[in-house]
Image 1 (tube, helix red, strand yellow):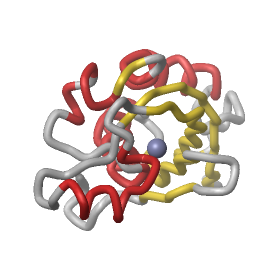
Image 2: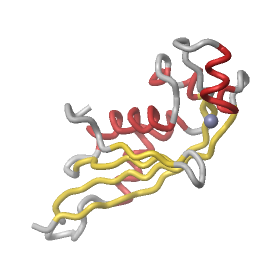
Image 3: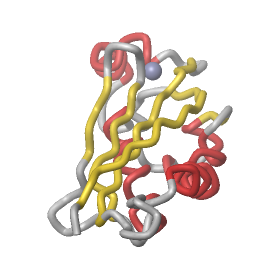
Image 4: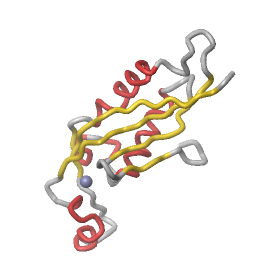
Length: 141
Ligand SMILES: [Zn+2]
């Protein structure tokens, strides 16, 4: 059976502050710049979720893309949209909510939710010009 990659773009708005207790306040300000603002700030994130699998000979789909959208919204996006990632979202209680770390969290939440397809890429856009890609780690997490 031929295999294909399918991508759905989703969107969420969220606030965050980039800060780590491993650095001093001055170092945090230098490393994270405006994203270290103590009173938080927002981003309009775009999230591209890519899954791969065999094309079903009956439907012609890898996975119904509306079903993929519904699953991503149900298990992930509703917990992030219009939230303060630092204060409202337990996934970031001890995790600095950089785009990289948000992408890893998205992977861990979505990987079990896309069967029978397989999650192969999370692309998280933090701005129109900046995005990060995550393909999972070697141990599958
Ligand atoms: Zn920011």
